Image (tube, rainbow, N blue to C red):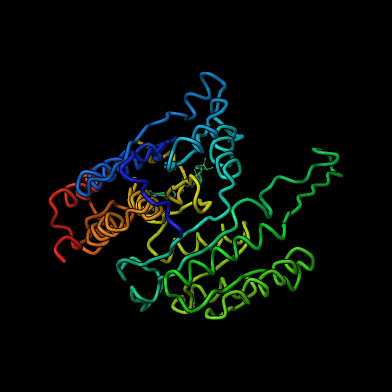
Length: 368
Ligand SMILES: NC(=O)c1ccc[n+]([C@@H]2O[C@H](COP(=O)([O-])OP(=O)(O)OC[C@H]3O[C@@H](n4cnc5c(N)ncnc54)[C@H](O)[C@@H]3O)[C@@H](O)[C@H]2O)c1
């Protein structure tokens, strides 16, 4: 979506934050593949690694240095993250500061999660083909139920009361809806489906309804469809082929996109982008830090590598993005995978295979 043009041949600086657990494992492979793509296509990329993880937080008490987000916004073209979360930090302080801090601090209001099935054998649904599972979820990323509004009254007593409020602004709803419609136009998709629960959430989701009608009117060439989120969840597993673009609020998008991840082969293959079109954006696999698999070689790096594809697209390197996606698709079709997908390769072996295929220039796109 509105890629930042590669401004002449000046380096595009990319901040890489591997994070914790398998975040480190998959980020190392994403880095490898990105370097191979940069070499193959002579991309002016400059990668810098930032080890802001649980170890550092536990040792120093610091999550992210002051001014880090300003530095990213002003001097970096993109940010890549592995995953955050460590059992030694039960309140998730460093993860919240770094991950949510980046999403909110850089106002990355679009959480884009493509759901694409590269090999029919990876889909848990009966009889679905690759072309039946190919849609994107636009999740509002800065508002809704995740803004932390609320509190406890009489906490830890039998009379405890907990209140957690949702926040939706007209500006915030308008801009995520517009991003979804604009993406549909740009990618030749005929329909956008908005999911809410306006039959029950009479105030907040009524705002979504009114905003949807107004934004849809700006895009008469796109069919505007609405479903209540419960019906949509059922349809996603019954007949996913009917969807091309789904747009929804923060919490519903979080849940629906994990259902989507299952349709495409599981958390190990699901990528995401956190975008503010035209500004420094952040890219990360959907999965978490899966501490029990850390360093075991069992982590699937494909979700991270497909997040690199989204990053390359956003940075204006469409050809390189297409090539990386093509080598990933081929490796999945050939069963060259980690154990979560039934293969026998380690995390590093999958990364090596993808990087080598790019460098040999015999990848599918290269052969025409
Ligand atoms: N964006 C993020 O950084 C993020 C997202 C979700 C969870 N988390 C954090 O990660 C930690 C672990 O959370 P969780 O166990 O609920 O979720 P998780 O995604 O880390 O792992 C759940 C399970 O999914 C499988 N899995 C996930 N990614 C995989 C991969 N790349 N390859 C193979 N299998 C994979 C594993 O079996 C794993 O046990 C927690 O601290 C949680 O808060 C972080």
